[in-house]
Image (cartoon, rainbow, N blue to C red):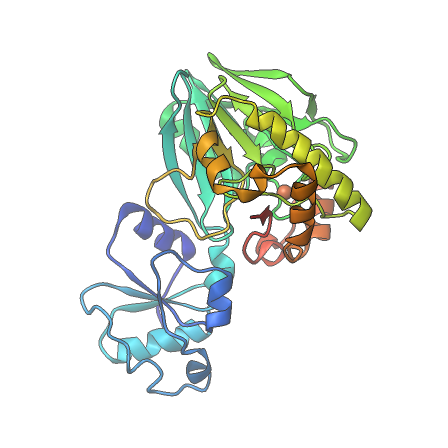
Length: 366
Ligand SMILES: [Fe+2]
């Protein structure tokens, strides 16, 4: 039986290679996360019992390869086999959506009034957004969430050398690859000042500045999502907000906090957001996450502060309403967040990051 690996499918989608992706999971599983542009047929139960008519009703294109997808790559084998028997060029995605967790794509943007160019590096399934920022021959990476080699290759392609690696906060939803990336590139590892991590790094405090070639990143301490959460302002033009502010939502303040601590953090988040809202309204907002699968369209997930304000109701209310609104809308806690946080505090990577990081992102409150 023919299978296809995540990297091949990722590359096909990236370069626009003709392919139809057929998702055979249940509607419930698909609602959690999906491959952008995929076709859905709720055939899981029928395929599981090898019903030969499971996919009969489907009208599939006959002239492009079809990649079948399920949760872990087993039932999709049955689907691919049935399609091949009908004459289709069908492959099963090895490892299924679990393996798809590490699939990524990029989008590039130029920042007005800055020598810097920004590559948004997106984990399409999980919605983790990391950034490669290059100016002259240097580059910085913010919130590395993928294998270090990916950032190194992207930097090389642009003629940049990675000299600084930063995190916006200690993450709870994915394993930070920043320490490994800094070690492999010889770059300086900057983390917001805190007493949580147990490995060596350069602490970055409020208003500290880091040079990337002729560009500058300035730290703005914006606690709330976590106590150390920090946003980074690039040449007074673009703001990397981590999990403090998203394009239409704000960060959650409750992880690893009891209800009273969450309330305090929600107040801190309000204050931090007011600080960001005082920046010029044309400032470009570049968040740390998005909650929907990210298309292979090369379009950056970014907009102006004015637009973020306009589309985020929680930003438009006074402090008491903000705190009440945030606390009333707390989403389910992300799976394995305690274990992920502990690994990030220890600077360690799990043996099987996919198992630990599975599922969509749940950082935002809209
Ligand atoms: Fe976070």
